[in-house]
Amino acid sequence: MGDDKQKRYEDILKRIANRKPFGQDSVNPKPSSPRDLILDALNTYDTLDKLAQKPYDHIIVHGPKVRRFKTWSGVVIWYRNKGYTGYKVLSLFGVWVHQNNTSINLIIGIRQLPYRAAVYNAEGYFASIRNDFKLFYDDKGQPPTTDGTILFQTVYQAKERLAYRQTLSNIITQWYTDVNVD
Image 1 (cartoon, rainbow, N blue to C red):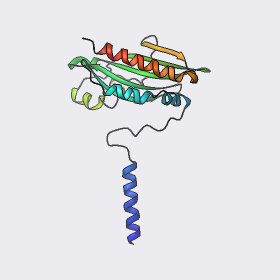
Image 2 (tube, helix red, strand yellow):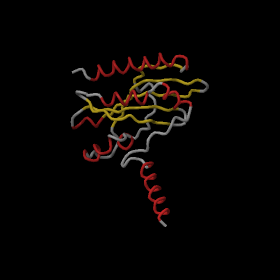
Image 3 (spheres, rainbow, N blue to C red):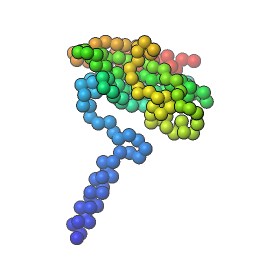
Image 4 (cartoon, one colour):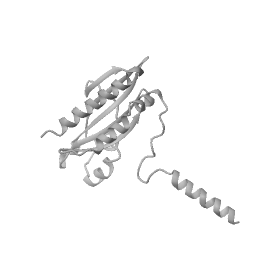
């Protein structure tokens, strides 16, 4: 009987260790699609995570979050102006890989999202916005089109991976400088 209790105890500990953190999405699974593998090869999640952790003078930054759809995958951070009315427009800064027929496009850009919820409740907003933006802005996090700002776009070629990483780094440095200007 003692062995059964010990096995049950070990099983409970294993389940606790493997569960997702309370109030958070489960840890992002390993990349599975070719688009996810490209984002992983470019180290986009870690790069945008470091960007989200930096100090900002005029904006509040959250994320990153991995977004996926049938033809694209992306990693985004979202930010808004500080102040009570800052919620009215949320901006996404991200890196997307988009399947376009036989080619794969790499896009770095920014999109503006208007607030779409029926009412604004500051307490509910601040409790939720740190984890996701979909509830209040009704958006999947798709790549920018003509409505957004495309900072870089190219047909992805694996041999250019390091050049793309450097381009991302340069764009992030410029973006960070731009958002911290008075």
